[in-house]
Structures are given as structure tokens and as C-alpha cells.
Figure 1 (spheres, rainbow, N blue to C red):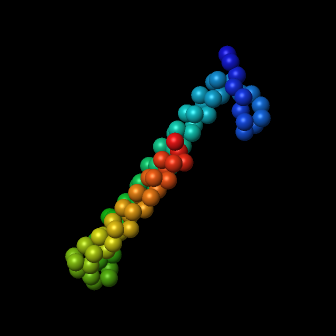
Figure 2 (cartoon, rainbow, N blue to C red):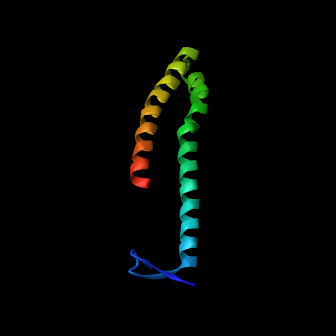
Figure 3 (cartoon, one colour):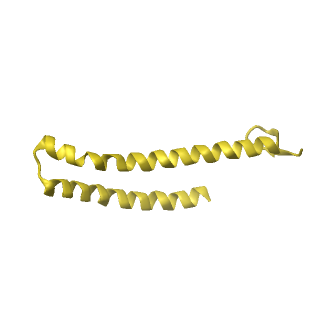
Length: 88
């Protein structure tokens, strides 16, 4: 088996170690992306409960959801561009 120089540790690691590190990194990235996506959309389910507790009607829920989407879309577009620049 070959070895590869690792600039982080200033040493050498085997190709198996590199494959293992890439697998762990990919799994961690997938988990983080799933968690962020799940968390961003989790509050949408609560709008009806908020409306019932506060006594607001369907119009207030619609406006609240529209405000959520209006803030979410530019943020995702900005982060997506930042991700392309940093991650590639």
C-alpha cells in the first residue's frame, strides 16, 4: 500500500486512512446538510399552532409564512454561492 503526505499532521498516512477520512467527511457533510435543511423547515409546521394560541386567522398565518420564505430564499441563495466558492 502506498502512503500520502498529510499537510495537517506533517506526516504520512496510508491510502486506507485517506479513504476512511473521506468516508467520514462525506457522512458528516451529509448529516449536517440534512440537519440544516430539516431545521430550516421545521417551524413551518408550527404556524397553525401559533395561530390558534394567539387567536390570529388564516391571513396572519399566510403573512407569517410569506415573511419566512422572503427571508429564507435570499439566505439560501447567498449561502449556496458561498458554498460554491469555498467548497469547490
